[in-house]
Image 1: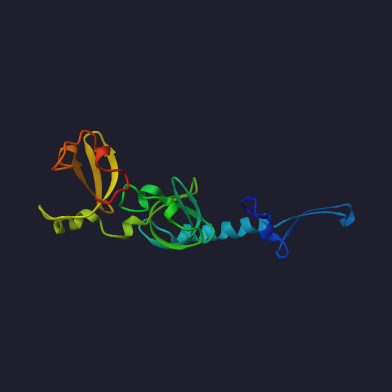
Image 2: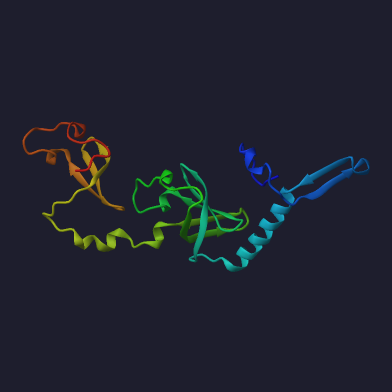
Length: 191
């Protein structure tokens, strides 16, 4: 009944669909129908249209089809393309769970491989590279940031998506000696 299987059988109940008869036996007492065949034909036609019109560097828009830890799949009208987690944001802590299934999203086409039916997209490439505006930060400025990683020598603090600064453990307190960064900060803290 569909291209992808699923547990949500309720979405098909009490609705009208078109089907193709794929088997007809015993004078009509044994008939097998398929909606999937029609959906695959439509998808193939859309894929052929995209093959002619889609190019690397194009800006596309589609609905989020599914969300995974490794990224987000965007439906480009019958063909799904992957936005890897690393291409969701300039931030190294980009999280695909921040996106919502069914939401419309714009992205830039990075790669197209019709032989393996893989299209890779990027959301972050639609915004400016953060390091192009690094000049707005000056030595001596006081800035709030989020602790995104802790190592034995200190903590990495994200000032904005794609720009992180490092706070050495020796610079974490003026009043007491800090031996481990965890004594002063936790991952996720705003400092």
